Length: 263
Length: 284
Image 1: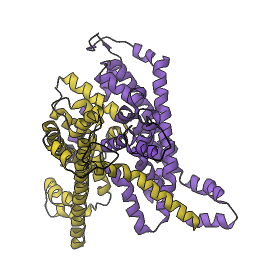
Image 2: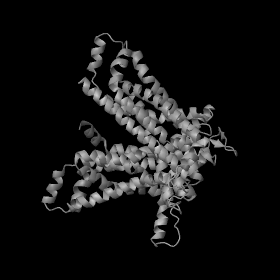
Image 3: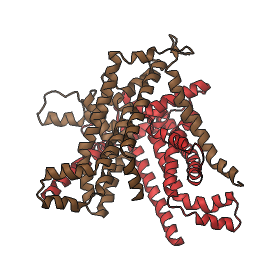
Image 4: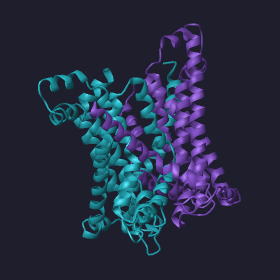
C-alpha cells in the first residue's frame, strides 16, 4: 500500500512537470508587464499587440491554408493507397511498404533539406506551394496508416453484396467503402492537420519568406528574444488545439452513435 | 481483370507521390553529398569525397559523438522517469487508465515549439526558477541555466517523454500480476521482482520507447538551437546551419547521409530483435 502512495506522488510530480511550464506561459500572457516571473496585473495588451502585427497574422493565415489543403490531399492520397495495398497483392508491394515508412523514420532535419534540394533542383521558388507539397508528403504515411488500422475491421462481404446487386467499382467505393471508413478518414485528416500545425523543422527549410508559417514565425521570434506576445500567441495556439480536440471528440461520438444505430 | 484500372486508380497516385517526394529527394541528398560547391555556395557538378574524409576529423567527430551521447542521455532519462509513471498507470483501475494516458498525450498535441519556449521563459536569467532560488536565498546571483547541454537534455526529455510512456504502458499493461504475487509469495524482494519479472517482460516496450525517443531526438534541431545556443552544436542544428547560413550543402548532405544510415541501422536492429514479438502482438 505504501508503494502505491509513493507511486501516486511520483505520478503527480511528473504530471506537474508536464503541465506547469505550459500553464505558466498562459498565465504570463495576461501579465501587465513583460516579466515572466512575477504577475503584476491583468491585461490583454499582448493580445492587442499581436492582432496589430501584420506579419504574425499573415503567418497564421498561411498556416491555416497549409494545414487545410495538405491534410485534405494527404488524406486523399493516403486513403487510396491504404485501400489499394490492403485489397491487392502485387509485385513490389514490400518496396512500396518500405517507402511508406521512410518519412516516419527519417530525421526531420534530413527530410527538410531533401525537400530543399529537390525544390532548388526544380527551380521552384520557396512559397506556400513548396510548404504544402512538403506537408502532404510527411502527413501521407500517417494518414495511410490510420486508414489501414480502420480497414482491419472492415467486412468485405458488404462490398460483395453491393457488387452482386450491380454496383460499379466506383459506386461501391463511394456508397459502401468510404462511408464505413469515414471515422478512419476523419482521424487521418485530423492527425494531418495537427502534424502540419506543429511542424517547425521541415517548414523552416521550405517556407522561405513568402510561405512563412506560424511555427516558423514563432521560431524566429523566440530566437530574437522572449516577449509576452509570444506567450499570447502560444496561448491562442493552445486554445486552437483544444478546440480541435473537442471537435474531434464530438465528431467521433457522432460516428459512434451512427454505428450503433445501424446495428 | 476488369478491375485493373481500379487497382491503378487506387495505387498509382500515392506511389507516384512517394516516388517523387520521398525517394527522389532522399537520393538527391546522397548525390549532393558527392558534389562540390564554389565559393558562393553554389553546387557544382564535380565529384568529390572530401566531405566524407572530413567526417574523420576530430572537430567533426566531436559533434557526432556529442549528438549520440545526448540522444542516449535523453533516452535513458525518459526511460527512468517514464517507467514508474507507466507502471503506475498500468496498475490503476481501467477506467482511470485511459484518463491518465490522455493526460500524458495532451501536451504532445500542443505545439512542440511552444513547449520549448515555455522552458526558455522558466530557465532564463529573469525567469521563475532563478527568481525562486534568489528569494529563497540559495543563490546570490541569477544562474545561467540556459545555453548548455543540460538545458537541451531537459527540453528534449520534456518533448519526448510521451513517446516513452505510451509503449512502456502498452507492455506493462499486459503484465500478469499473478506472476508478481507468486514471486513475492516465494520470498522475492521488490528489487528481485523488478529485475527478474517486470523488466524482462516489458522488454518490448523499453525497446520501442527507446527507438521512438532516440531517433527523433537526433533530428529536432530547434531544441538545441533555442535551449543550447551556439555552444551546443549537435548533428541536427549543425546540418541546419550548413544549409541556412554556411551554404555548405555538400557537407550538410554528407552529415545527413550519416544520419540516415544511423537511423536505418537502429530501426533494422530493432526489427531484428523483435520479429517474433511483433507477430505475437498482432495475434493478440
